Image: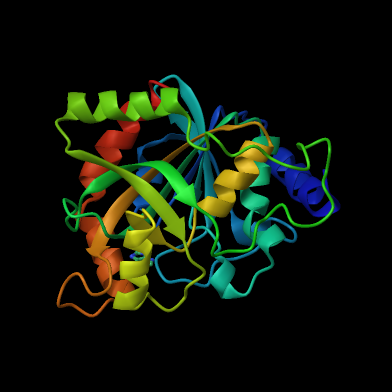
Length: 270
Ligand code: HPA
């Protein structure tokens, strides 16, 4: 464990001895899911020594520890992004911290631009695979052998059994669940129509500015990972609208009830 992680972990333990089984990251506009936990403890990021603070509107940063049914969960409400200027080690620190607290599974959520033909704003999609080629790999640097291997296998980044749990939850809740391949780009500018045509041609269905680096770190730590995107908008060039963060947030709020029902149901199957 590096010094920064150790310090942050010790601070968390000074506030709560809660041991989560699932770590969750809530994407843009989806933060209110944290209200559905039977809350045990809440820790604002700014209280944690050395912790990165999100500068993005709609990402009020805190960890919420609590139960969803019988499942102990830690929710990260508001993540930090690479485009904010943080070092990649800082960006993935929260994922490492959730693992240090005991989480064995990671449920990553995000708002994404939709590329696939049958997507619509407000659709939910299970992430089945990802493209990490456009962002700096978070494992660059000395390898911590206590955390994982130097050359991490990524042949099955998203856990098939957890994916089944999400599909079953969608069926039970009567939610139309799409599936797709997610690509993380650095942002913060949105893509051009030509970039979206390029991504579509190489098999990308969902585009965003997060998640993939967290998946890589989680897999390195041996965690099982599940990812869910909210299609907050059709990707650049696929509709007449200009893209804006406001639209992303509004779509998040509009789909929040559906998203919450899906995740609440799915986590209890993990
Ligand atoms: N592009 C990149 N990131 C995003 C988008 C998008 O269209 N929508 C939400 N996050």
